[in-house]
Amino acid sequence: MKFVDFNLLKKSFSDAKKGLFYSFRHEQNFRIGTIIGLIVMIFAFYFPLSIGQKVTIILLIALFLILELLNSVLERTIDLLKPKIDPAIGIIKQMMSGIVLLVVIFSVIIGLIIFIPYFI
Image 1 (cartoon, rainbow, N blue to C red):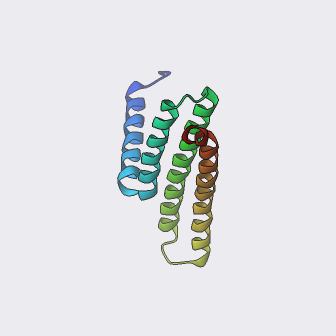
Image 2: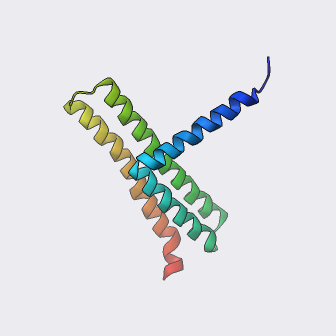
Image 3: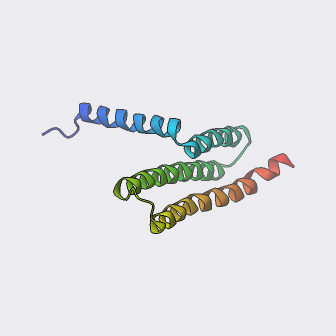
């Protein structure tokens, strides 16, 4: 038994890359978040931020993108399991979107706290 099967590992990375590209092409919010995240990353490395501030920004961008992917996966799964319109399903989808919105709101607040001194 091999400890690491590099062919399987290569396939896993290939599948993950395909999933990210699919999400970027087909999920508007993921695409917007990725582009905004890249812009914020440029600012984070342009301005003389502390390592802690840079790490915070990277973690917040990652958190948003991960939750956006999770939201999309759960919505598609729910649609497969319950294709008929159901008010309870609508509430679940709204709650999942609310989770992502909270991350966006708090990320913007933290981003403003970090970046405002450099724009004033």
